[in-house]
Image (cartoon, rainbow, N blue to C red; front, side):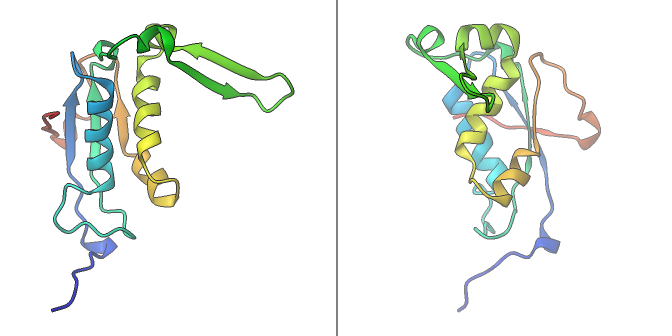
Length: 143
C-alpha cells in the first residue's frame, strides 16, 4: 500500500470563523494556525498547501493570561541605526488588536512559501462583523 499524496488541483478550501471573545491568545492562534496549515485534514500533505481559510472575529476582546498585557513587548526595527521600536501589548491591544492575533498566528506558521500563502488566507477583525458572508463560513470551536 502506498502513501496518499494530495495534489494541488484536488484541494477544496473551506472557510471557518473563530470567535475570540474571552479566549486566550495562544489557543486562538494555535487553532487558526492548524487550520491554515491543513493539519486538521486527513489528506494533509507537508509539501502541498492544503489548508483552509480562517476568519477571526472579536480580536479586541481576546485575553492574555498573567501579566503579559504589561510585560510582553513587541519589537520591530526600521532598518536604520537606532531604529529599534518597542510597543507594549497593552497599547497594541488598544490601537491595533488585529495585529496581535496576526503576529501570534504568523509565528506558528512555517517560514517558507507555504506559510506565506497560508497567512494570506487569514482575516482578522476587531469587532463581531466580517466581510466574508458570501463564502458561507462555518463556526470553529477553540478547544
